[in-house]
Length: 222
Image (cartoon, rainbow, N blue to C red):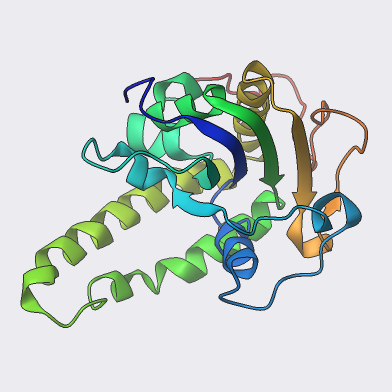
């Protein structure tokens, strides 16, 4: 992306692995669904006048420049599912983190077993991507979207089945946020009322869920 194309006064990033509840939270913040009860650290965030954007749309070179106040919906599996790597620098969408005057990050998490169960449940509903529009002209695009979503879920499931490996992905994301020098970074678990993990720290430095620490269990970062 053109580094001078987007000049953002404030960027709020709502991030996390797939199935952590990002879309549900975004819909509540946008007013499409009832706004969730948020803790004091989040309840004061005023997002009126912000434009909500998805990282997928940022890849379009023909898109219009972004407005000065944005909320970015970001799946931390993007480097894995789109670029076959765990290097967050490979994702051009994250260039926005360094081009905003103020950066606030909200990272969502749930335990791997919960994420795997949710993903398997949602996989059975992916066919809706094919039937999203009734016009025949959209059928080909919808089939491609369905196939792409199915392939991405297949890539994610081994990570959900390996708590240690998933934690390493989160560690990589936390490193990327720190490198971007975020003004604030809150890590929350929606199923526990968005309670902030490790208050007072920039990012957690111990796993948020139990991992297998036995010798040879860590696969290493890819």
